[in-house]
Image 1: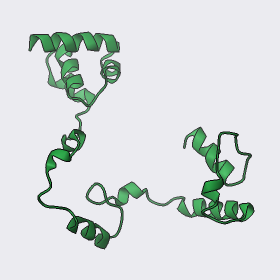
Image 2: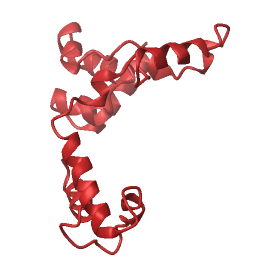
Image 3: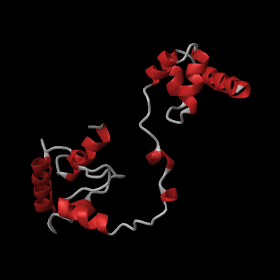
Length: 149
């Protein structure tokens, strides 16, 4: 849990003073009209959520959180003739291959770096870090690769 999140939770729960830039009243108002009761209810709410499975584990069809009946009702609302052109490119792509795959797949590091970057899944810095070079070196390598192909 990040430091900022701990500060927000501690301040919302009433364990410490709010920083001037931190606003918690709107969250607390969801629990009670009285601040001390709201803080207590908030602490109980947070406690009840501890050690629960991540909501992402309950995700259905990659986008739905809810009962099977809810998912079915949402699926029934989809237009079967809807164009798939509206689906973002990232959602249509296969999961990214790890950068180590590119190191092992190609005969030379220049081609490996270029293919990894051109896959669209990694930044110049990420590729450079795995290959032990700067992002500028990766950039030059990609440019040379593109010019030769």
